[in-house]
Image (tube, rainbow, N blue to C red; front, top):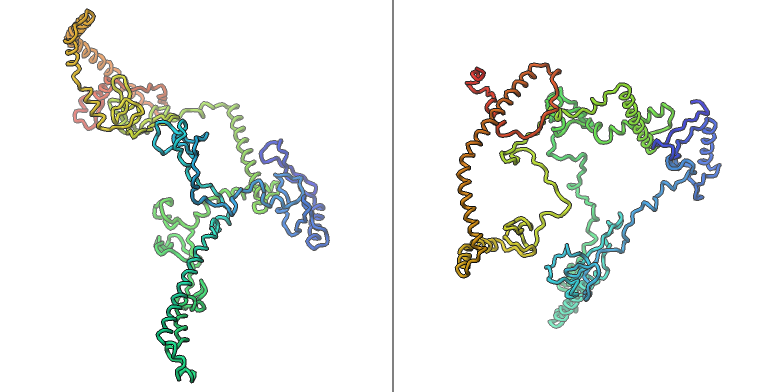
Length: 583
């Protein structure tokens, strides 16, 4: 490493406008002076380094922590500001006193319509489209009557780590007074019961035994007052509090168990997966089997439940980390001071800029070769499906054009709301049409905002349609005398009926002409099919490399005559008379 050498690097983005340059290398003399100054500062003989805020920097802090990264601002002095939390990037959390609402405010109903409220019920928490109340004939926006109360919307709280684990957040201390009052009442009831028992014992004369001769000699009788007090103390809950063990401590030798390397018993042991002695080696000391035990069994490694411990080395970010480490070694050999553990951010940015430059270089190299030698048309060739007009996708159609098997064409969806039913209807408006009117298919109603009547509505609509219209018209004609215009219209109707009868007679003669046309079309189709078969036979005799592309194939639906000709000319190998077709 020669002294005085300087190596400048370009910015990671690849542009010169950013102005970020990698720090230059120092000479050996400057490096020695810097190390001596650091040693003196660590020993306390030299003053500590000061950051931009005037605070001393601990000399024992490593340089890669105290120095400002070169890709941020290489001109800044060493500081620890970039290691501290940045206030503009901190999330805003709720305070510890914030909590969800409890209860609903009474007597807080609105009496007038408020701007921005629901036009139907008058609540401020939703709009007319999301209103769950029955649609009013005249909305609250115009009547200002029966304004619905606002929904009880809870606030959106976001707590930090301590706030989420604060078990007393939102607790009301007044709730504890109810427990105190309950226990005080129980204590008072115990005292009153005890006083009643003492009064009963005094009245019965049981407490007069204190002056007995056994008590005078220092002996206590079994039913003495002290023993009864002791028995009453047995009922106290805190009598055996001193005998209780601390939580988490149990000195019973039968229960003191230490378990290591817990394993689910249903798991198959690694050495039992393949009993072949020549399979993967199992190390009993480390309990490791690095190779795949199913390697020689023909099973796919992706389908087995365990494929060895080596899969960890080739999954996740292991490969990308290895590539980054390799790039760091190559860059260090070429004079750039980068290290994966010491300065990972710098290495990552340099590696990204290197990949961008590498892709640009490959693109420029490719363009240069194409400009010099040509051949762009071979790279832009269409796929084989388009060249041969054939694909592997099988779709079967019926005679009417509907898809029987295969993938159907995706239905185009519009930006407007579709399949939205209203007023209890099962179908949308426009699903039924009759006599120039649109309606609902579920009830045959022609009124758009009407409520669904179901099968009853269909029956009523059909009954109205089945009325004898001709009888009503005849009765009207009998009641009223016919005018000259009506008589003229009747004559025209009779003439039309006569013409229809003549047309039916002539249609029989036309059917013969249609049959002749069909036969002529079939003959042309048979001739075309024979020509196609001859062309295919000539192509099959040629070499595969000399066959022309079928790119000018006309993709259209075959006619009925062409399909019939194909069926007639098709050769079936299982047909016993197939050998006589060419004779």
